[in-house]
Image (tube, rainbow, N blue to C red):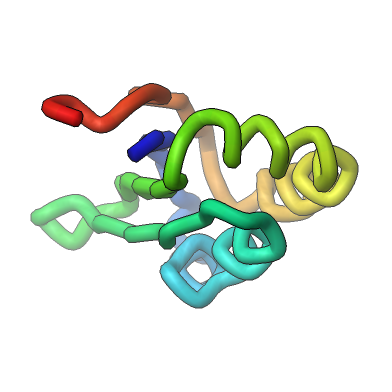
Length: 101
């Protein structure tokens, strides 16, 4: 399994919109679901109920992720640009094969 894990600092007035867009049934998951090998997205919120979130995007393997990017790169960039104002920043924490696999 290939994972992409991101962390986000969400703006307080954008919490509901962020959760809707980045959750397991949100806009990102729907975009990723266009491609073979997408296994799902999980969204986690800071234990204190704050504005820090983590997403985990799961793919069958890196080749499926790469094929998605090759086919849907423009849609990816467009969605990323449209949703960027919901956060005060984001960072890729991990991208690679799931440990132990």
